[in-house]
Image 1: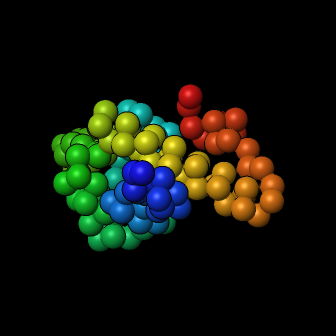
Image 2: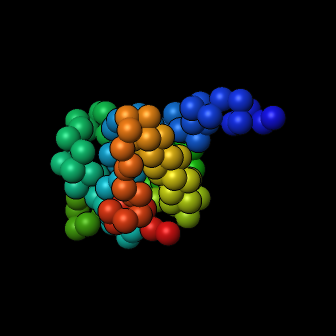
Image 3: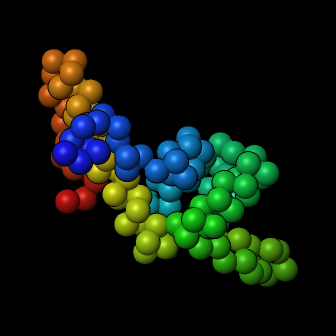
Length: 124
């Protein structure tokens, strides 16, 4: 019997790097904009301060989930963040586990939850 069989509600794929609220919001934002987003746009979309955003981006960058490009637009510094291929895959894997969790919780509550793919949240 595997660990998953003996502990079906352990949800091993709920990655702590991704699962933190601010990082979950950052990754969701970056999934919606595959070409990347400017630091200021991410800050606004996720409701974070400069310091919080910088720290969460650093964690995601260290984990290989995002890449950061620094440059200039005119004379102003410009930082852009985007998901890496590995980051996109890891986030989709995370969402699949989250979908399983939602299904399990709905089943335990006596109702069926719609798959996230049908809602357009996860591509199949």
